[in-house]
Length: 91
Image (cartoon, rainbow, N blue to C red):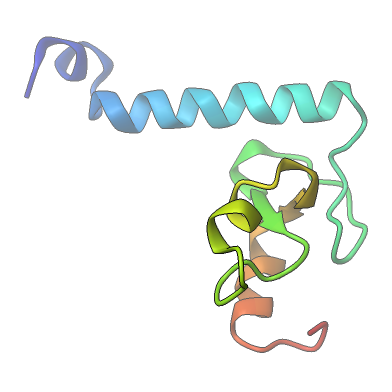
């Protein structure tokens, strides 16, 4: 384990990813955009935040462009994303 990871008590890249998610969530909150686009519920914790593509990007004609299309990405709840991926009721 490297020095940064030892000092943090967790892997450094895990800590960095968590910090990034916390900052992103805080900014989404400040903008008032912390509402799940699928169910409309307010996202209260960074742990519940999922970034979702409103339209499926896989198997599209312009996959790479669709994946990075920032205007097609919306905040969602992780539980809704999992349910949708499993073919849940809101598909």
